[in-house]
Length: 316
Image 1 (cartoon, helix red, strand yellow):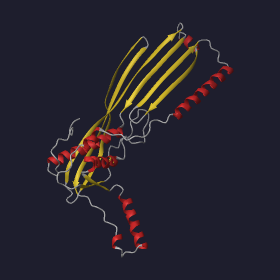
Image 2 (spheres, rainbow, N blue to C red; image 1 turned 90 degrees about the vertical axis):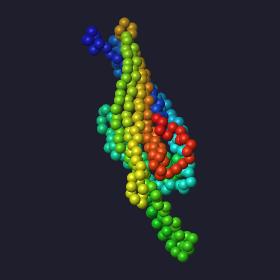
Image 3 (spheres, rainbow, N blue to C red; image 1 turned 60 degrees about the vertical axis):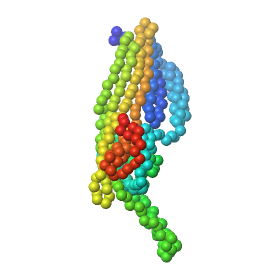
Image 4 (cartoon, one colour; image 1 turned 90 degrees about the horizontal axis):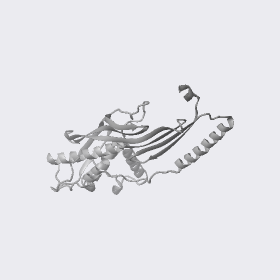
């Protein structure tokens, strides 16, 4: 039987379909393999086969290039809605707060079972999410957020304005004096302190008479730390750590059978995988950390807001 199998000559054709967007990754594949016994692969036949594969490949590439995906969109989160629902400050002016770099301290690279990745496992732009979250608190009525991460560029631009005004307008014009920068009363700092991959994984499957189905899942975890510091004294007033899980799920099925008196084999495969974006998880973790700092600061008397309940502040 083994010698007969070695004498079989076969033709293999593989078709793959990919469909990706910002939140999910889909992979659908169908593989057909037909094994023919006694098929003479002469030069003419080989050329015909190669020509057919080239034509079909060009058509497939044309379809892939023509797919442009969805239009850009602004993605909201549940935690952002909770930030907007926070009541306004009760008899207090806006709180001036400065945001410096929100760094990645995990040192993790993107997980891969094949080779080492150069790309980091988490985003390096965490400060962007911090600024956005602070501006969303009570629709922007809580914090006056000051630029500090790009402070060098800001100072250079102010120096350019000052030198231009002195050179062309003169120093005597009092109304032409550049206003001083606003200093912050509070400083918010933090970092992404942990990224643990594959903390939980599992699945299930079954196969009978060449027909099988399977389902798998995997859970990663990211942790962010955040604190608020009083600028005048350097005292750390509030601190928090927030952990967010990142879920991945896949399922699929396949069929493998022999046809035509065991002289032809047919194999079918299909599957789909859904992965939660790591950036989305970090964003929601940062927003929830700010929610927790606001609630804790109110309990400690650092600020006051109206007593109407903040819906879902500590709900999971």
